[in-house]
Image (cartoon, rainbow, N blue to C red; front, top):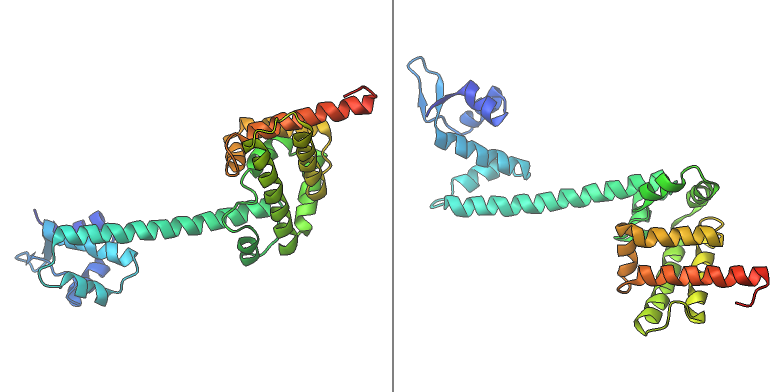
Length: 260
């Protein structure tokens, strides 16, 4: 089958001017010309154009592409496999760039005003706002949310790194208790749950016992929260929830003057 220059331009979504330029520099010659002198392209020409455009998307110069396609004894299958590998690498790179931009956007939505390099230094691969949408939906109108955003806006790199370090240390203690069979309702687990509540109060917003229990429910009902705890130990979200409820019951009883 033969294609006119206009047809192949539409099929490949390039301009006629581009095709004429490729012809002029010897990168893509039409296989034939009509009686009137118009360029006519074959299916093989269209396939070569696809390869050219693929390499262009990967950042190769026209001179480099010409050298690649002009190499002697080029195996078409091997070349397609090479292109696929290069495209996969490019897609992965773009995905990493997209994730970095998303992380920055989410951080800004929380009022975190770190610069991009500070954000990466403070959090590494972790997303400081990975659950902001869920939290915003549940508590956007609350004083706790407003206070969390107010505090977050003032944090710099050192504060975020200290917060991350404190959280990780607390999670490691909880994970150790869980994996060593310490009951989630024990005094040790309750103390760790209380440390978790005070951590929230210290860094984010006042966290009364009732609110702490609501957060505990979220930790096990939302897979995103659950997975963040499971990084430290299997079933840690469930363990922490039980400990939080046990701590709330213990402290509430003590406030009432009951014998816990």
